[in-house]
Image (cartoon, rainbow, N blue to C red; front, side, top):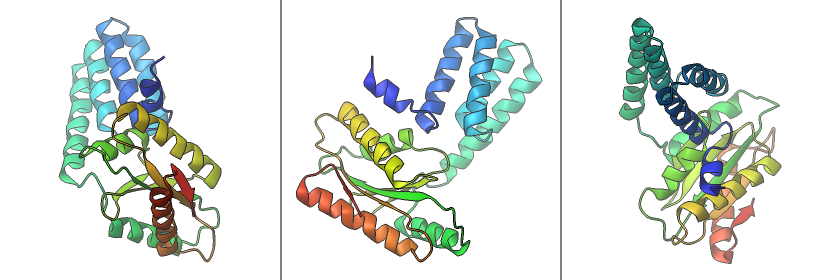
Length: 222
C-alpha cells in the first residue's frame, strides 16, 4: 500500500478532491462514464460545487455523454473558479488570519470549535510545506504564512483530540514526501470558549511551536 497516496487522499481534504477527480478521469478513459459520474456526485456532496477540479471533471463527463452544452457550462465554471483562485493569494497572511479569528469571536458562537496549528521544518525545500498542507486541508480551513518560515493552519470544527490526529497525519505525510528534509515541528492549540481571544489562540500555537523546535519534539500543545 502506498502510504503517501492514502494520506494525501484523506476524506474531506483537497487532496481527496483532486485524487477523486483524477480517478473519475481515468474511469472516463476506460469507458466507465456512469461510474465516473457517481464518483463525482460523491465528491460534490463532500466538497460542494465551487471547486475548479470538480467542474473540470464534470465537463469531461458531460462531453463523454455527448451533452456539449452542459460540458461547456461546466468548463466555463471551471475557468472562472480557476481564474479566481489564481487572482488571489493562495496563502493568507498572519494578520488576515488574526482578523478572521477576531471576526468569528465577535459572533459570540458558544459552539465554536477551532484548532490552530503552527508548523515549521528547518530544512524544508522552498514551497514544500505549503504544498503538503494544501493537499491536507479542507476548503473551509485557512492556511496562512506565520512568523519566519512557519506556516499556520486554522482548522474549522475540530477539537483538540481531533487536532492531534490531524497533526499526526501531517507528520506522516511529511515523512513520506520529504524524508531528507528533517522533522516537522508543530504547535497545536484549541479555542477555549468564551473569554478566549484570537491573539491568545495565535500566541499559544506559536509558543507551542517554539517549544517543539527547542525540545526536538514533533508536537507540543498550548
